[in-house]
Length: 323
Image (cartoon, rainbow, N blue to C red; front, side, top):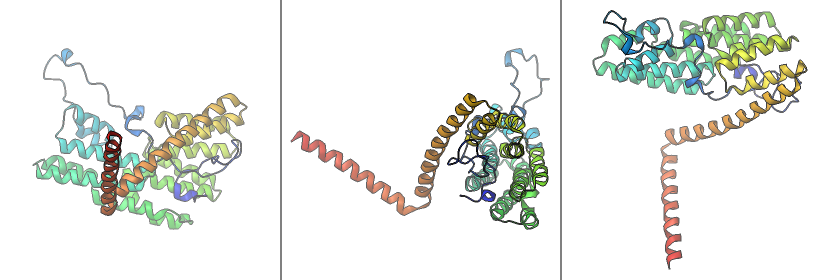
């Protein structure tokens, strides 16, 4: 079984265990459909109908105030509505990607998004958007985020809370990585059967990032392990408001329902989790293949050779049929 400390989320029940048996670990999904999973607190208010705007006194929707508050998804939406220059919008899209991937504990994907963010900053500076790019750098310096991600990656597998806290210090220097640092520490405390310390760490993660659904998931798992399935159910339902396609929450919701005697609802939740798990596995396989082709020139060459061979075979088949 995968080391739970490396996964950063505690599961009440693994796939190969009967639904009413508790367990701790299961990987978080590769990437829940986060692009349209905007928590209510992060949703951008609907702009007024231009026909109803009476004059120039109406304030112009601007992405900068949202960015200064760390509301990256709202900043992205505002930049889209303005519209902002392409490099500004691309940079904000990349930052939202970093946030989503860190929440899902997809550090390699977060690094790719961070690389896209850095490229957008350079492109904006080259295009003369000095002020906008300087603001973004001051709010989310690529170097700071890189160090934070490195700390999160290094912390995987550390079994001592004090040592882990020391390793995770760089992740505490930016809000985009700080909540995940607290979540990782909470997971370790939970594995060490220190529920009070774990709950405190998960609570800190949620306070810093209300959209961190895995931290909320872990709070529900603490309730489930403590024999409070009704409280756990409430947590899991809140998780699903943030991430409707998070199969882990569906699975553990099924467990909490079963422990309350709600067998019919439980079966539906667990089956939903199984379907989502299959979908996620297929998506991960496709993404892994794309990444391998992207990073390995030899594999790209092999792909073109195989495509050419397939075309040649089809041509020969048609010629044979015609002859």
